[in-house]
Every structure is written in structure tokens, then in C-alpha cells.
Image (cartoon, rainbow, N blue to C red):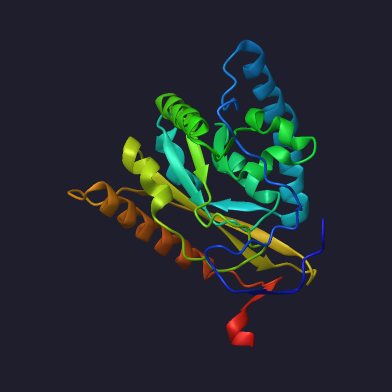
Length: 261
């Protein structure tokens, strides 16, 4: 794993990726099993998610970032309803952990890049930790959609990072497409968003993360599917952009390359 620079130059806000992990992207084919519904699969989910992962995640977030969540009460009426939760993609490890505390005590499922199943050792636990890697072929796509159908019917929470690409410690919200909002439109579910913001601590080299929750959002009535997706996208983007303005600590400075040149 390479060390991040204090200044990163970018050219494309939609497609540039700055993850420090060097992993050959695996193909998620029709043979990939998204949900482990058998007895041992459910048991491994409980052990991996609640017994092992969650306590370690709490220690990591509290000790490293003094993590705090603001607005969790907005989810109190959603305990028995399916929902989709959108967040900004700025933490290599934290982005896999923070949603578990946003939705606690409920478990969450997260739509992830296929690289997540190729991470040494941890990749094997992706299905048991709620990871849903994006499919690579038509057969896998069918299985992926069946899995999301099942999760919605079981009133689960599904997390999506609409920016798609990782920009560590970025303090703004990058433009993102409306395509990922077809899920709440298709299933007619509430949409929430969370924004991780960065704040100064006494030690100048360390930051505190405050996560703000906003929602629920629904598309305006009378819109077709494409318009409804765009309407939801605008509402979520505006809420996240407003929250991002509260960040007061920039560990990594991002510069558009053409501006620098």
C-alpha cells in the first residue's frame, strides 16, 4: 500500500480513482453467490458482522477519528422499512465501517466495487459482512438483482457510494450520476444520505470525522422513472454539499491538473 501525498492532482471528477490498494479487479460472474441464506451462512454473518467486525470497527473509528454521528434520530421510524442510504466515498477502511453504526443495531448491505472480494483474507468475508460486489456479466447481474429484491422484501438497508471512486479525505462532494438512484425509484423506498466531514483536533496531523445524516427523500410525484432518479439525485447532492461545507480540516489538497498547469 503506497502512502498518500498531501497534494493530489486530478483530471476527471467522475472517473479518477485514488485508492492506495493495488488489486487486480476480479470478474463477478454468475457463479458468485451474493447471499448466504443457509444456517451456516447466517451463523457466519452474525459472527463476522456482530461479534468480530463491529467491535473492531468501533475501536478503529473512535480511536483514529473520534467519530461522531449527528442526526441518527431521523432513522428511528425506519426500523422495519427497507431504505437506500447514499454517502460520500472518502475513506479506504472507514467507508465499510461507518454505515454499520449509522444503522445500528440493524445490519446493512453495501454495494461495492469487485476489488473488495480480492482483498487478501478480508475479501473472503465480503458476503458475510454485507458486501454486494457489482456484477461483471449478465448472469451475475440477474443474481445481483435477485439479491437486492430479497433484501428489500426483508426490509434491509442498502448503502451506495454514488461517487463510485475513492478520494481519501476529500472535503467536498464530487458530481455523481443519477443512475444509482434507480434502486429507490424501482422499489419505492425512502432515500437517506450521510456526509462524512473532517474537523481539526488538537493534534494538527489528526482529524475528527463527523457524519451527518439527512432524509428521508422522495421523488416529486408525477415524474417518470428517469426524472424521478434525477430529482432524488439533486436532493441528495444538495444535502451532502451543504453538510460538506462544515469541514474545517483538509489533510489532502486536491488540485485540478489543468488549473495547476
